[in-house]
Image (tube, rainbow, N blue to C red; front, side):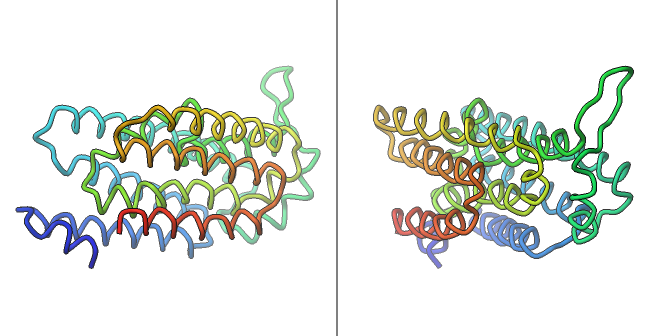
Amino acid sequence: YFGVEYMYREAFINRLLYLLNLFATSVIFLFFCYDYFLIMFAWECIGLFSFLLVNFYSTRIYTIKAALKTFVFSRISDMFMFISFILTIVVFNTTDLSLIFLQTPFLAFHYLFIGNTAFHFLTIFSFCLVTSGGIKAAQFFAHVWLPDAMEAPTPASALIHSSTLVVAGIFLIIRFSVCSEFTLFTNYYLILLGALTLSFGAITAVFQNDIKKLVAYSTISQIGYLVCGCGFCCYEEVLIYLIIHALNKAFLFV
């Protein structure tokens, strides 16, 4: 309803509503599917519809550049997820999350050998998953796509990119938290990444004049708190904060 009232003068409002509904459907599908292959499929759909929403005003040069940047960082996130998917097929021999989580404790001392070098399997697996979620959640070094994604129409910027899309990355980290809890490196990595992001986003937001850029960097800072909380294994508190954060961003533009 908010999107219709805000964009009713636009010539291509039907395309915007189709993309918003498809994006919301992909996110809901991601939240409910319990198979790694289906999670990858939903992840790709989220990246695709996000790209199309950012590129809605495709006649502007800056919009095309912002859409390209969003697409590139989405592909990097997908690359890390695909690496972890290959590791899942090779080691777990299944894509069912219940079977993956059941086998995880027995692989606490499982190593992969490349030549004479041994790599802890769960560390590599969880690091790829966490990095994929961190890029989608606009964490430090990968945060630059979110302010540019505000080139999307305001309903998409306020209700999608400032709340739903970045929350999908946090959800991925929480969904595979069973694997990351068996390696201290991933927890330290989450804590450091979240601490850097929350401080950088808060400081950068102070110097913004554009309200959309201000919301974007404020979102980056708040998502940094959530990533840091995942590093400390505070998943219940993170989920509560996610709800408050989503409502806060939604009502800001209403």
